[in-house]
Length: 305
Image (tube, rainbow, N blue to C red; front, side, top):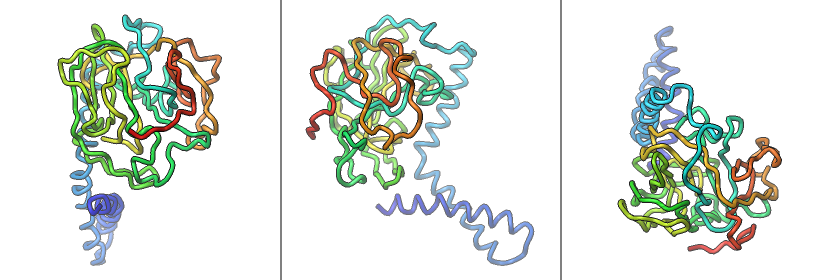
């Protein structure tokens, strides 16, 4: 755990150093010269956070490519018509904690690659996503739960061996993976239609590049790898295989069922979209969702795998 502690020390120490550098320009007091050395801790932070800095750079480059391709006319649910029917990529009911098909409730509307992305986890009747020690990934209900292929397709990219992210409490974490998605699977479902399933459990991925998968086939287990504050599934549809420079696509699911979760405000106080404004087949944050043909009901009976 020494690395995370040093990492969080640098996050605060750099500000002391920067302030000392500025004050030192107006004063000859020796203490400012010594404190200014803390400014160099920013390089330690960058070393620990390399995957985040790298991901941010790649997303900026991707944004430029997407803007060049689409201009301001990015795909939306009115102009994009999928040739594929998608199911939710899990068993039973999970809660949408981020994501929507509109700007107001979107996961990351300003990031075209993740404009229509979703984050899923499991909540109990008290609005909690875990029971026990919040720093232990195995305390979370969705950890190690089965992840499914959302539709038929071909696996085109896999990362399977990244270490689990260390949870430090209060939304803090230490990413041990080499990139922000952690372990992930990318599946090609049709022409310019690819899905990404990210933050998967280390060594849980059951498919390889080039494999053909069928809708509902088990492909991995939910984990906590990459930039992840707690175990969850990040799922998105995109127009190319790259996580960084493919435009996000709105997803319309087949036979999806929505339910209002109990005590959802315990985990997320943000406003929710009224259910009567949600078009058939679409989902948004603040709801429990499940495949309507799935016999499982909410709350699920949590079984660690």
